Image (cartoon, rainbow, N blue to C red; front, side, top):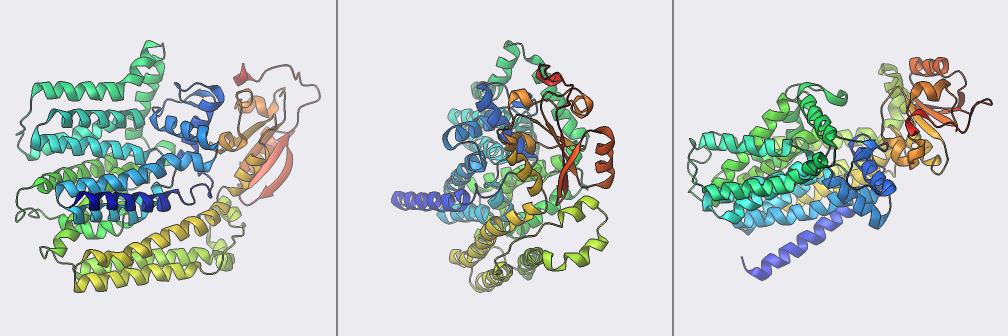
Length: 559
């Protein structure tokens, strides 16, 4: 491909990525847990001026290293504290990812393959939404991918700079989310090596270069922690990583095939196209090439991550999100072979694509009609908190159900076009339908979904901004009260017993989920609490400063 054409495609991908991933990222509030967790740590860096220690509620937070939080803090420094700044780093990563995948595909095969890979990543549902979020994983996954990608090139070409880049990006993955970044790389390498019957040509000097770059990028922060007397943070961090493998952390459990289901239905249409590649003899007729070698690395990394996080007892969607890189690669590989007549676009592909599109369309339409029919649904809901949340009223514009029909129609259109003649331009209606559906969901459905979940609580927190008070969720864990009240260090006390009955020095607000047992429990444990109001899912109470309270006394956690 000519250089000017490559530059043109790069420019188009940058403009398209900016439109897709920057649009609307400040229009929807952050959702608990992870989004608010990381954004709050970044905000506290700005409040305290301490950019070295990651904190939550102005106390050491040892669950994550600081790289991504540094990015968010810098973004907030530029754009101000808010949703846009918290999500801006991932929007930029979305643009970088599209350009990177195009160039990786171009180098391994050709420009068509690069466009297929980048395009399928962009239009698949979960990848599209994750670049508009404020969680760590888009950067973490990107670094792991490049660590594996450059090592795959080193295995073919044995160039020292490739080993250095592999070590650098794997180290950055460690600095983003911890040792699991190296674990994924190491397991992928070991399985790939076993498949190759442990045949690998290398130079010991390159091994040292790889390890030096890995240690420099991934270990520097941990070394400085130990050198400055914060070794306990490292210990707590490692204990937490082990606990994720052994327990259902934060209540996020799931069945063993959880991630299989998530990937198949969440990374559509790529997941459906990629099914063709999961055959034992798929490479039998494939000539030896760069792409054949990369295929093996992508297939191995896919299964390593999928099996690893199926074993882990904590089940969260983004745990298997690295699989989106190899899965979209395999989808591009399959689509490219279909265009060349080496694979068939079968009725199974069409059924899968149309069936999933119909499911998304029906679910989206049903959600837009929830207010009309919820009185018939509520009698069958046994969760009092969910029933209370459903009291909220959504605001719909009226056209939303048409988007579900559009998604189904464009998917059928693609199946007809691609079934008759496999061409790159056949993907245009599929891409248009998926992206319009995703953007509509973001601008229209997500804000309405928030009304049925956290909106009343977040509204209450926002109203407390600038007020010298304590805000305490009762009987549930949340980070929203930190970020949305703009909590300051002097208001960080969370000693429930002291806040409930002690000599508090400033008013304390209690937020309780609308569960009768919890509301009655608060009335008993905080006898001075005054009801402010109840609204869609939550009760709000105020405990004023007792008349005999020593207002000069500091709260237990504020000393």
